[in-house]
Length: 167
Ligand SMILES: [Zn+2]
Image (cartoon, rainbow, N blue to C red):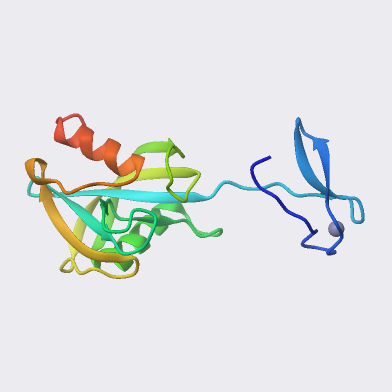
């Protein structure tokens, strides 16, 4: 088990580990409730304009000082495309339209999400301006990319550099 819970969120009873649905899971004997941990879901957006990609410089760890595609967590009651538009607006001040699903990535590095959904987006309005957990924002051409962080951003940008990203 990679995540730990000690107490039941419903009755505050002590949890015990029990094999349920093929895995050891925290279980509350007091109210007969099993704790199912959900994956943390994030979205990331590839926005290209005039053969340049929009990147943000991270203001916080992990990856502080390095650059990545605009990204953020999906709220529990939010559609992922809506989260992608919202996070891009928060980090870059750009209004975008989501074009299509590019990829779904599992967690492969020290990024904070377990599942990362990648979209392509088109800038509709606004001037790029850094906000939220972005220290800077900018458009970068293929031959002039800064130091990147996070597997999805690196993977998508590398494909794009090679002309292999179908936006
Ligand atoms: Zn309980």
